[in-house]
Amino acid sequence: MPWVSLSCPASYTGTANECGRVGGGGIMISQLFILSSKGDLLIYKDYQGASSSSSAVDGLYLKLASLPADQAPVVMEHDGGHFLHTRQRGLYFVISVRPDDSPFMYLDLLNRLAALIRDYCGDLSEDVIRLNFALIYELLDEILDYGYIQTTSTDVLKNFIQSDPVITKPFNLLDLSSVGLFGAETQQSKVAPSSAASRPVLSSRHPQGDQNEIFLDVIERMTVAIGANGSMLKADVQGEVRLKNFYQNCPELRIGLSEEFCVGSSELRGYGCAVRVDSCQFHESVKLDEFEFSRILKVLPPQGELTVMQYQMSDSISTILPFHLFPSLERDPGSSRLRIYLKLRCDLGPKSQVINVRVQIPVPKGATSVSQELSSPDQSAELTPNTQSISWNIPRIRGGSQLSALFKVDVSGCLSLPSVLDLPPLNLSFQVPSLTCSGLQIRFLRLRSERPTPIHTWVRYLTQSDSYSVRLS
Image (cartoon, rainbow, N blue to C red; front, side, top):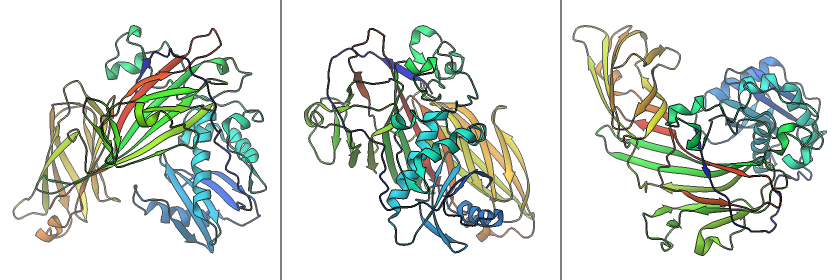
């Protein structure tokens, strides 16, 4: 996804509390491990000599995989122990907990571990972990001393980490080939490549360690439920402003939000369209003395990744929904074949483009094969019997356009009318670059450096689906 360059004049100084130290106190970790989306054990640390056979891990994975994708973290009992997990980028971060301990400390640790892997390896995926397992084990040795939490600060840890990350694709700021998809044709467009921030935060001994770059992501996740008649039943948005800082000894950074940004029932401060959210939370290092009147956040960011702000909207989305789906289900008379016809319409503006669209279509039990008729050759679809669904994959769709698909599903046994009507909702997943459904915009990023070297700041907007379901009956 592209980052749009913002100018950064202005001069402001100040201090902010550094975040990153978890401070475990008497909390002691017994086991910590990372599982792939298929249940492979990628990383495992045992701090108390507890036995954890592969069969026990497999059993735990089966329980984790059975949970919905949007399931909130839960404490799960398995094989005589209690385990807490978070899921990020398809990976399961799991930690053993004691029944009388508060889970929030463990959740904070798992989230910080995921952020540290992104800081030191550049990205978070199964391939990245396999290539950088030595570095991740070195990180765990510094974070946890015999199971006791020491620190999770990127700035502190970089003084002790000696392993170099293995980069899957070298970073090149002049390589704009990956940006053409989003409309950036030339280098003069001042759009950084999509992989610009997907590189590690290196220590000062590396030549890339002195690159003065700051990336700011405004990411929003939509939870939408649409009834069978097309009416909207639910539309929630969870957003966050995430900062990734490659600038060592960064001075105070000022982030200007939309002047029309309001929380709850507070009055509008600007004259444009309102960006009203129900709730808003800020990182503890953020200063809010200018937020009330100027909608400016001040932060002294450490090197690495930091979530500056989180916000939530419920049933008050100011923009239109990106997609409308019109399904039709019919039975072939005298046969056990089900005909599913779908019409997918993108209601965004013609300049917008949605990528990585996937439609999960439920099918009755006993579905054996499927034939398909798709409206364009770049689409694909396949039947997955294990999940009882058809996956319709669309690489990209432009705003204002419409696609269609016809699936003929053969079902073993008798296909009764109730079995067709009792199908679960249909689900969509997608990403919309350069757009926020709330309308939140970043007016500026400003800081002053005493160094003569230039400072590059980039802003990216991204809307993606968290749960976007359409009822079939």
